[in-house]
Length: 158
Image (cartoon, rainbow, N blue to C red; front, side):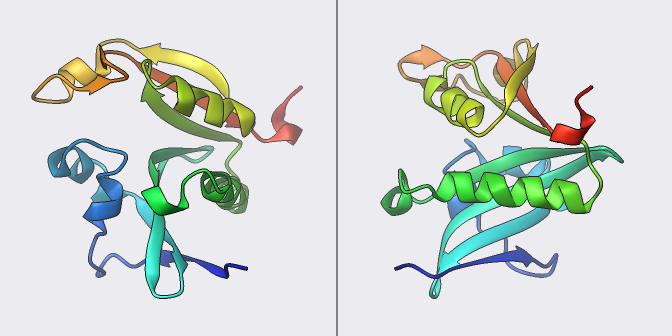
């Protein structure tokens, strides 16, 4: 049985770009948010196997800017563990909303978030065209729009 450890990385620690790049295309794109985000790693022994960057949009809303799991640990529920931790952190910060954005071409990612209690909130048109210096393709389709999904803490729903 694996014994995972979940820890926040201090600002002075080395940024695990190799993990972050599993979910984002360039170091430059990561640098746009990473220095303003809280960064967490999930480790199995001495090895970091997953990463998550959380950004506080305002007093009531956290956003998952990056979430990634190494290939070897995918499809083992690790992503759902991270989502659970993000929900816990949002509750600790008294946030009522947790956002995450993914490409409109990322059907598997959208299903993953929906299975974890997120619902589609909005579309950010041309996000991947305007924020990356080159076209990015996923599933053979150029990424254009960002789908933003939201998890609302149950007690906030009227």
